Length: 199
Image (cartoon, rainbow, N blue to C red):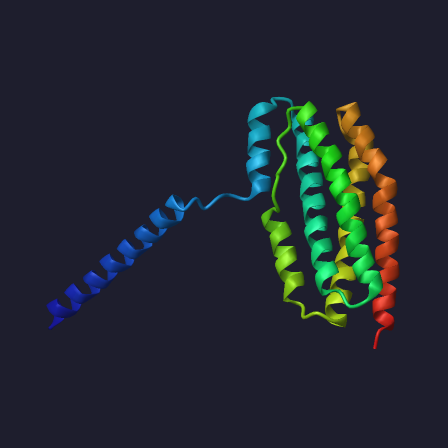
């Protein structure tokens, strides 16, 4: 009986290992891609020897990720928002971050810097978290809160790049984006306060 039990355990262990192996092969064969942000950063790391140039490239990658996320969240806000302010802010985010992304693509191409073209893993997580909120005041509150925290973080990154980026074109672009980002933060704070007043 001991031998039978040992043989059974070995069989289960073998089948478990086989199943895991098949799962890994299946995942790889179906193209389980890495995070678009990491792919872009890896390509830039291979291209640039200079650490300062690599930091400039990392900033453009981060800026693209921010714009892509704001566009997707803005689209969702227009679909699921309850307040007119939420819908209007979502529309504004889509319009202005789409324009910013267009300029960014041209800048990145001129510097031979790779940036993500689709939502990053963090961006997708943010979208999924927001999408889980049922339509109504909870959605509005979450969206406006995300816009406040997201734009605060974005402003810090752009302020740093406007002072410290090695490439003058990248410095100038970061500087040119700050008034828009600050206006977005102001709109987000107004929307957040209106959400608090909702009953």
